[in-house]
Image (tube, rainbow, N blue to C red; front, side, top):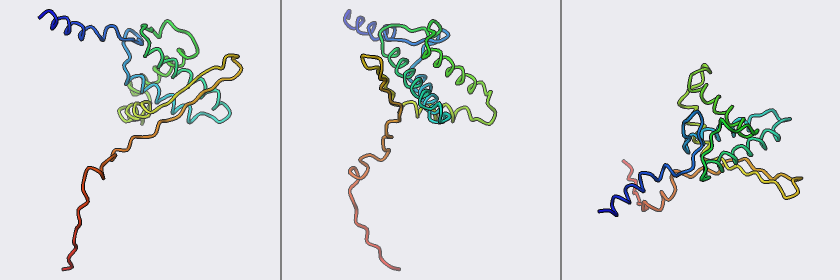
Length: 166
């Protein structure tokens, strides 16, 4: 009985020990992070060509930073960070809040958030500096979509159909 209580207590408090990224005392879950990543990806993709590389590098670095914070064992309060990455993430959250509040007429709220979240779940971002800090290696792209009909043909045997003219 004591073991059962210990197991239940461990499962109940396991989420408390998880890493958290908070903003305005609200814990951000993976869905929130995906929405942020999706919006940043779309913004980087549609940026003016002369600033596109610099913007994409910053967006990639910010996504990597946010993902690392989310995976860490530490609690990160976004309000207490003022790095370029944290400021960009906070501005992105502000845009998302404005969309939710309906401040952009003609922009369907549910469809937009759903789109950003789906895109964000596929965003692949990398950012690394070489030891001499002279070269920055970065990547910001989408992972390929998983096909919805995967193994469909293998699950259903082929039936021969005989067509008889009438």
